[in-house]
Image (tube, rainbow over all chains, first blue to last red; front, side, top):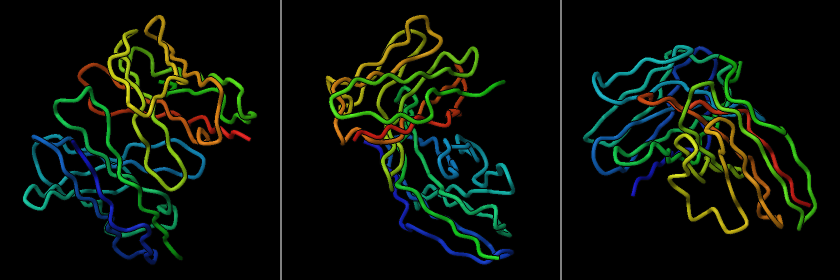
Length: 114
Length: 113
């Protein structure tokens, strides 16, 4: 069975400060890891993924994430947060032996204040 | 690329009624997924199609739920005899063969009164 944990319900950060959203996972075999963002009453927008290769993955809108196999983590980061980054962020994992279905964490609400 | 399209965006129904949602995936994406998202939770997998074949169903998909993808293009999700617990956002996603990214539609928000 695969699972994802996002330990923080909400992250508050001032505009211009670094933003980190935490994610840990559990999966059999090598994980496929994803970050999505959701704005109110909207579907999910893909931000970035880790399949293989470099542990530091760069994605859309200046976001990046670091895959850490020993800690089974995939934290999302942005060096300088914008007010427009305020949204709900989801980490997801796909096991290598599945049809591609994603297991999502419960989500982390990011609030960026001016 | 027009993205994944879902219809309707919102549906309000009375308990016991049947509802049907439609999903149009990205053109030529042969893999299609349905998820359900309740307030404060991440999306939960419901079912998966590869072309017209329904290859996996979650145990969340009770007998009242049925999904089809008759020609391997659009898909429908029907809920019979709706219950208040069915109130949720129903999300559809698609991806291509060999692709790893699932692209999501805007969802259908169902409210059962």
